[in-house]
Image: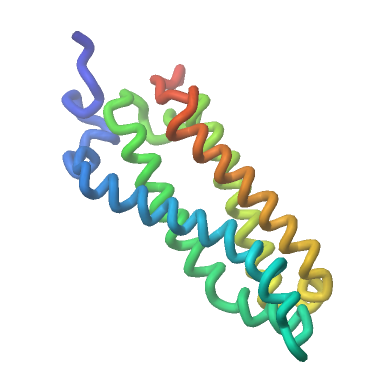
Length: 167
């Protein structure tokens, strides 16, 4: 029987990576945060803006995007990092080697999408040009968010499996 990374030491050998309760809580927080990440632009674009009385689209967007993007960014990246560690526990990979697998490369694509979402969200809260074209940027945010969620679903439940990297 092959010896696993957990029993042989290495980066992913910490016993806390085997804690099932921690895995469940982190996954729930991560999924809830992803729902908020995709849902807020939808609600703002299709519910709040059409119902705004005298407020302009820019004012509505500035109000919604003043604080939450930073909170979401911290939570989703933290829980995503922990999920990445949980997923690779026992894989035999080094931390850097984990990114040179099909799973790791898709995680990097997902991180790139989330960085784009965070930058656009922050700019919607502070930049007049982004606020002036807010409806377009909200659709961009929804699209990027849906793509990130689809990739996340593939990583955790689809055909993409953790394997040992070739490096």
